[in-house]
Length: 181
Image (cartoon, rainbow, N blue to C red; front, side, top):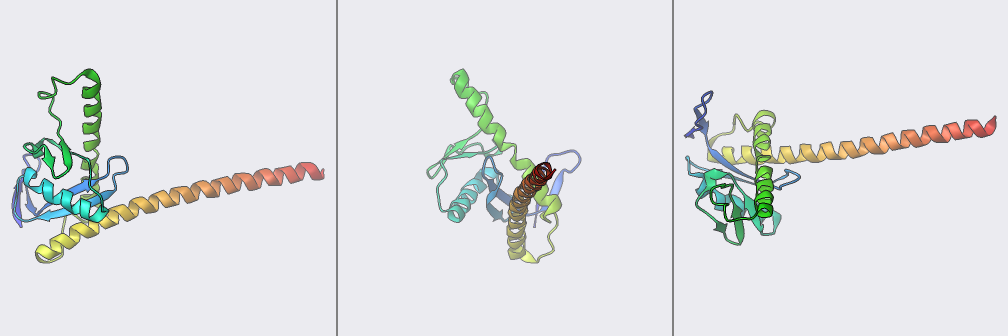
């Protein structure tokens, strides 16, 4: 367990371990979660998180969009690191700036995922013992998040199918009534 400085007025410190999370951009499905001992700098956690995501997915990612805490690395293996930096983007044309800004906005979708993991999937408090317990807790929280996401999607599709069948049955019933009278 380590003391991690958050730099926020309402919660200056957290005690625990550092977790690196990799998600897909549009679906926010968690594809990698890595556990780190102590309080390493974000730039030191990036390579391990990407390796774990690539091992689980079985493919290498072309780009990784990160926040400014990961400054210093431009490339990890074959993966290009995209970092929001308005001062360094002055040489880009308007189209390239807009494209990069849109990519970097998708990075902010990771923050709610982290919040949901902490609030609804028990990542905030760990009752498992030791370093292995910390790893297991993170993996189970990520798995629960993904299962819940897929279950919600399945139930939504099932609801649409049920609604379609209801409408079809009522239209068929009304059609029979009109033909019998």
